[in-house]
Length: 282
Image (cartoon, rainbow, N blue to C red):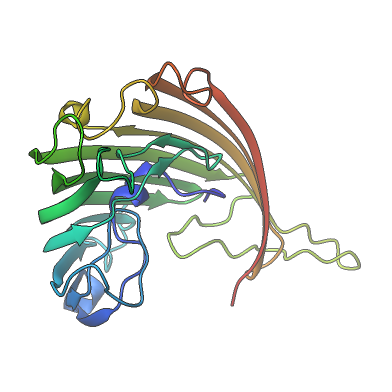
């Protein structure tokens, strides 16, 4: 729906290697997935595990209880997913929609300086849902990431441990101006773009609000309160032009407000960004 994904994505696995069993029950009204994966840091991607030899378990249930009916609730979907594992090694930073880093754990290669790493249980939980009815689409999700960390370097707080719990959520909505059916699986224009035939594709407007909140216990031992924000709040408006089922243009405006990090030029002011994308999908 937008050029950049919202903040919950930064607390969840992006891509990981493993094995998974998944399927549908009751004519597609209930979907399930369960698997074992190498395990990655929040928002991370990985093909190989080098930090430790532990694995993550992941599971998801998603229900569309009215999928096989003709009621107004046919397009309702509700789900919950989670992961559990034990992780060690480097932790990722968090970035704004404009890809500017607004939070980072303390890190250093010097023996006398602070260096923070994952060191223990990592638990994620994310409820989610959507609703589609005619040209209307609404999507929401909430993410909780609880990670055991340790200050393995030197300086203040050396050897300290904590369980840090970060949260993020989003709510997004869109409306297809040209009247097509909105759908999680995309929009199929009634009249695909064609200069000779007069078709102009489908036009969609969208809006989103999203927040990411850092655990207060991260400061000051595990992150610098002068340079890292405690939260980021972003709102987005967008226009999508679906030329046909496979080609789409996006135009987004996003504004982000930060709390904390007064000495960081990025977090000391609002971020304004315009994003565009031309997409071909198969």
